[in-house]
Amino acid sequence: MAGLRVAVVQFAPVFGEPQRNLATMLALLDAARPAHVVIFPELALSGYFFQSRQEVAALAQPADGPLLQRLHREARWRRQILIVGFPEHANGRLYNAAALLLPDEERVVVYRKTHLFYKEKLCFDPGDTGFLVVHVPAYDVRIGVMICYDWRFPEAARTLALQGAELIACPSNLVTEAWEIVMPVRALENKVYLAVANRTGAEERNGERLTFRGKSAIYHYNGTLLCRAGEADTTVLIADIEPQRTRTKAFDPLDDIFADRRPEHYRL
Image 1 (cartoon, rainbow, N blue to C red):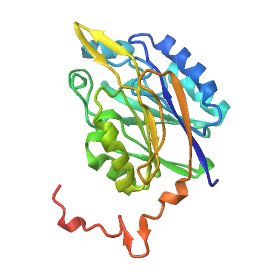
Image 2 (image 1 turned 90 degrees about the vertical axis):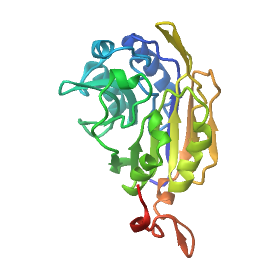
Image 3 (image 1 turned 90 degrees about the horizontal axis):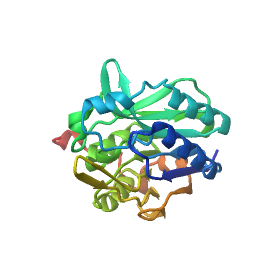
């Protein structure tokens, strides 16, 4: 297929109430019905501001847990790719994770956040999946995932793009504004579409308050803005993209941003 419709879902998950968050997500899926890919925020099922590993353990679930199974049934029924942030427990560890729920597969593909932010370092184990790209033949698209703070590291988006990602999904709980400058650059420098599903609202734990900035957005591969939400809206944004146009990295007959790379001279 030539075109693909991508949705980012923006809402305020309620900390510690996964069933309530699931109900909100299912309701918002109705507004995302026209989309082929639907991206929810980071830790959408649980809320964000954990204070201890014990709190994470109380809400974490495996990739085949009942809440994700429920969403996977929706993915199959609606013929959509759903990308959902959740706290995962696996092999005795706790991860800030994103599940890719595919309409034609029973398996759940999980990305575990590589770069932990602030108090996440006290509550989660560093991700061990590495950056991964999933090819979905039914929609002829290759999707890579990074989570929130991963955006700060140009190696993250570049690694995904070098693996063939045409769309980078970024479930987020962003509390700063610097990302609004950098995200379009990540799209431009890799010639990929980039979709940021950020949350809204605030969470206060132990006298400390985090305010989430909203402004979920989808960027064109040339870095321009396709759509953006407000700071406090509960909303679904949908944009049409053309993944096949990212497959050549040339921007004129002689210049190609990947073919012209000279990694033997890079010191990383």
